[in-house]
Length: 295
Image (cartoon, rainbow, N blue to C red; front, top):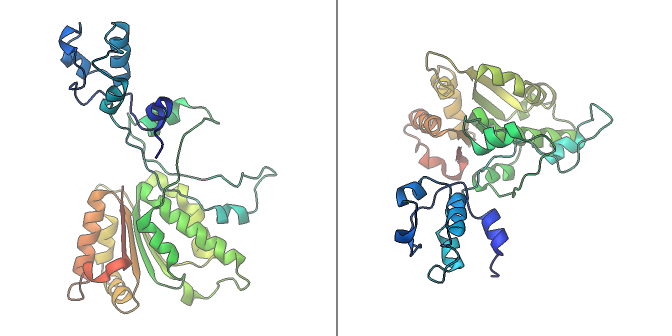
């Protein structure tokens, strides 16, 4: 394959805000006026500017290619798409200004020092340019291949609702385009369990109402707000009546399960299903019908 230009390499593959992992590549470190400990604490871009201004770079003993390969690699941030183009294209606009066909929505969990969720979003005024790539999501893509009538149990928390929102929008769009809209309650195939912060519930109420009342997609909707008692959304699966229903859906009706949560909640959810499916092969016995995305 063709090698990228230096500009492309530094822009798309390198994190110039992180320090160099080491200075094995730099032959004249002893002659430098700044200690290695100080260089280790500086962003790699600052180090390069210092070495260049002090006359240490470029140097015959340190080829440019060697310097580039020593730079810290960029670790892209990955976010699930929370919207469907098929849904937006069939939604009547609330104003005369229609969203462009390439409009998409993502959900982010803000971090105080997050370079995207805090720095970029708080300092950028729309429209702001943003470099991105669309990548396949192998786990969740499986859900797009199953018939809409197949029972589907979803457990999601926080920003993990993003792919769920996208899935609901796709199903709603499909029901809109159908010549015989789904009004049969026997076709309500999705059991949805959400763990959300109280102030986030209102953000998702519109799509949930449409999925339940208009498109008739939901057979069950359970929302567990964050609470001081430590009661988690997956704890609801162990309640009397729900436990038996989940077991029947998975074992008898061959339901799929989609878990989209943080690591701790994913482990807790898996443990609950192991208990619910005891004697029936557990989670491993579900094979591809168990779909998990951990953020």
